[in-house]
Length: 255
Image (cartoon, rainbow, N blue to C red; front, side, top):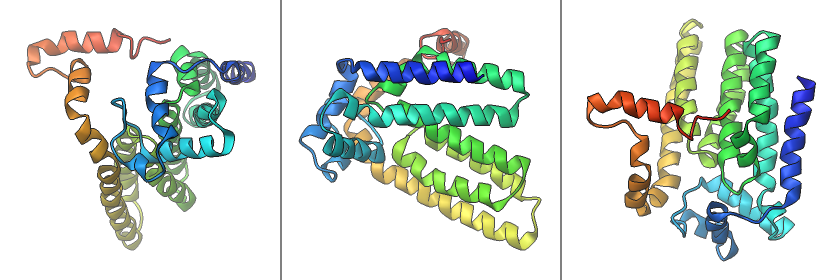
């Protein structure tokens, strides 16, 4: 396990150190940082791009502090990628026996896309980080129902939507699991936590709507056209072929 983790960290850092030229998607997003202030990054982005606002702000801050090099632009993604790998290792060992936990960590450590996206000016490594952090908080609470795990989850959850749009799915699922677990607590405490969760959920989705709706409204037609083959078909008899294409295609084909 130690050898695999060293290899995974070394591969990410070596790829980061190369300072490779930005490719098309990276450049399309990075151009938004050059002539926009923090407030301007709340508006629809140029070049048909969409990204969470906190990710955009942190990227802008990195450029202000570190300059406009490839290394500055990729600093946040590589840090998130390394932290995500570390948290995943912890999560695997909290859920599995040592050997399968090591194998699961090894898959993430050396998978091509997990390494590549950890060194790209896109929020994908942040998606991995916040999703893993939310899951780890839930697992820790299920193993030992202590308030510190709930507090950690409550702190990570609002950050998730601001730095990772897919994090909202993990947030929703983890909230349902935690609510189910809290049904077994004392009545008064259960009421307090349930009310807090419901209010937090409403605030969470309001935040998501507030920060993302302007971006997506501006890109509704091109986004719908670009991703239309990725969603389930309307005709039920086409679903098996769609499922095969999705699960055996480029998105989930590695490793």
